[in-house]
Image 1 (cartoon, rainbow, N blue to C red):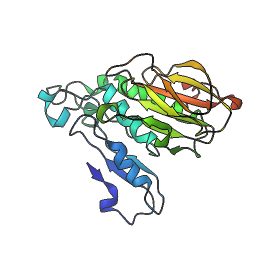
Image 2 (cartoon, rainbow, N blue to C red; image 1 turned 30 degrees about the vertical axis):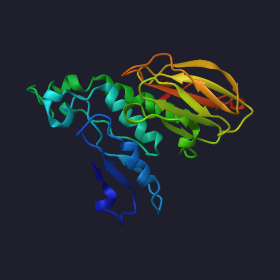
Image 3 (cartoon, one colour; image 1 turned 90 degrees about the vertical axis):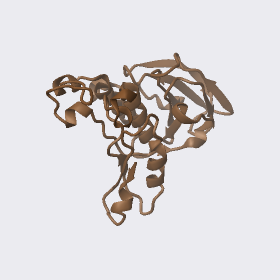
Image 4 (cartoon, helix red, strand yellow; image 1 turned 30 degrees about the horizontal axis):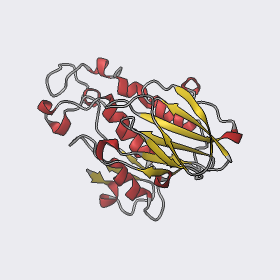
Length: 239
């Protein structure tokens, strides 16, 4: 893992981290959070997270990072306060034309991998609500998990998103956004679909159970001030 601030601490433009390809479930959100809290305030992002189909720990015998891994790295980072995200594929940066165990496919095949396609759904989600007021806020989460199941939360003044990488229960401290009533939705990072859950009082602690669970069954809980009339994220509006 690398911190840009270690080498360019006086830079006035932005900060960058590199969570890299060394292991599964690297907690890049910790690195992003550390940058987010720096003064003076600068944008930060994970400039090199795990790449899709890259050997885990640089060893093919360990297996390869897949779409679930690259989605997790993206949502963890952006919900922790990153200004954007870098998606990468191991066989695209190398422009692989002769597949072998370390580079497992031709680059023309690699550009169509699911993790690459699914990055647009993260963008559609973030741009569906007021962007510039959004902050990371872990106080939304009443109970969290360690390791691969770690939940990350972000919110604006009248909306909130909570990411569950493996579809485990989310217990929310309500009352962190405006409104007497909150509309809740599930957002699917794999397909970009939204499903209405219900409308709830904006107080107390409420538990939400995702539609599915297990590795690769990641979900985003969307909470909106019911009076705002926000629409579901729309991938079709992306340029």
